[in-house]
Length: 410
Ligand code: CTP
Image (cartoon, rainbow, N blue to C red; front, side):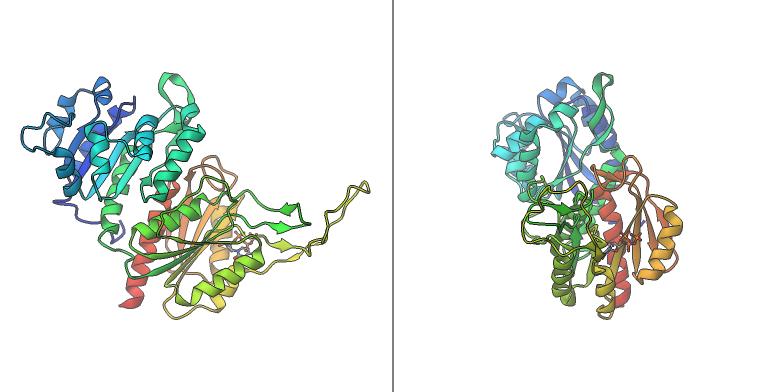
């Protein structure tokens, strides 16, 4: 366990439960939160009580479950009281309806009113059918909430209610509790006072004014790193080559610089690097580029040959310019012999940490909300992380960065 893991005793967590079939898993989340020492106040919507009995929550939690805005006997305005006293509000499951109400700022029951009346960090754990999850309305509402600083633990692919398979399955209760612990640790400042520089997305090398050479990187892992570094108290600069228009949003406090090519990424990273305490190079940077044609290449012959030159190695330039105690993390995208290749890359790149993933594996790598990585340290350590959300992977990486920075400062 990284040293940033808090001793949660006394921390008050509001556990919101909305009306979805995954509500039964909130019972397990509650039990685990209690086990690690949180004070948990459960809060259910009326619809949630159709899926799990309120008595179950009352019996297991630190205090009785609350459901209605107006039936409180101990407090006249329960939503403001609950919102103000919470160190974190976690919603399991967050339904499409609850997400929409939050995005619209509605407060028509105790849970939505508490969410609105609170300045505490909020972690949503959505769960719904794939068709709902993929609706632009749901994704746009989530993007809006992310922009406002709400954290989202993305659902994973797997078996859904009714025997269907697909994206929308609630992340495992264990991962939710781990995330809650780490957020609470973060609010106690694992990276506070630090400047973290992150790169994300896949670069695009122009061929002519309309065409590019690019790769399959979505930018999700880099965005999750920026978001989580921000949550851990860092000042964050994100250099993003992720395509515009993708539903990638980070908290307002993260400063984002958009770039396209490897050369632009190099320039932006080197400009921000001198003030950075840690650099995480999560972007998939092109290894080759070309001099683009000034005009659109016409379809005039049956064959077109492009001649590519080596693109700048951004990581190499950053390592060459590294300042004392600066922590540098590289990524390794591999499709075979992941561990062997990663070991060699770690030595060759002279980074403090290398995060390797098999980009051809299901549920890992470039596309989708989950990743499965191995973290190699310059000290010879090897940590294999089973498949989990890219946010959870980001926490693993950044809590290690925080301990390296603490060691460097010592
Ligand atoms: N990287 C970089 N500039 C490049 C290519 C890669 O800074 N032009 C960085 C990536 O951001 C990543 C690390 O180098 O952090 C490793 O990238 P990867 O593509 O796995 O390795 P390469 O060095 O390109 O080696 P190869 O493609 O031969 O595996």
